[in-house]
Image (cartoon, rainbow, N blue to C red; front, side, top):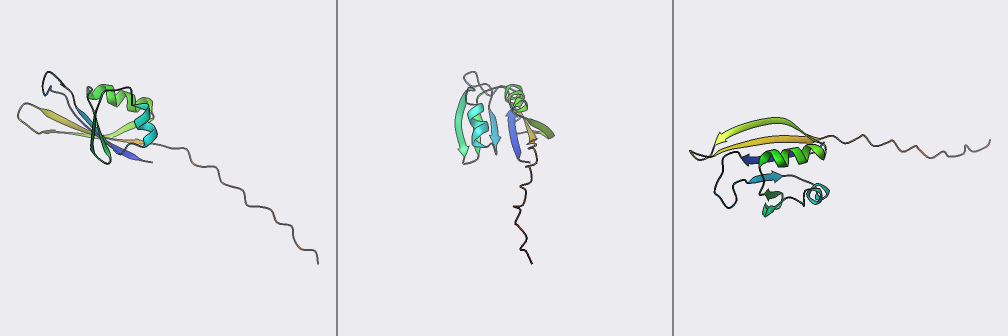
Length: 107
C-alpha cells in the first residue's frame, strides 16, 4: 500500500495564489487524474504543487481511493498555519498464478 504526504496552508499566502498544496509520492496515473487542477509545477522529483485549497485536493485524492491515516499542523510563519496529512491507498491482492500441471512419467 503506497503512502503519500500532503502539505497545505489554510490561511491565504497572497491574493494571486492564496492556496498551495504540496503532494509527495503520487504515481503517474494519479498525477494524470489530478491534471485538471491548477498546478504550480514540481518542487522536486516526487513532489507536485497544486494551487488549490487543501480540501479540494484531499477530496480529489479520496475519490482516487486514498484515505487519511494521520495529520498534524505546524505554524511555519506567525500568520500561516500549515497542515500535513499522510494518506494511503489499498490495492487488491493479486490473484495467485496457478502452477502448471506437468504429466507424471509412466512407469
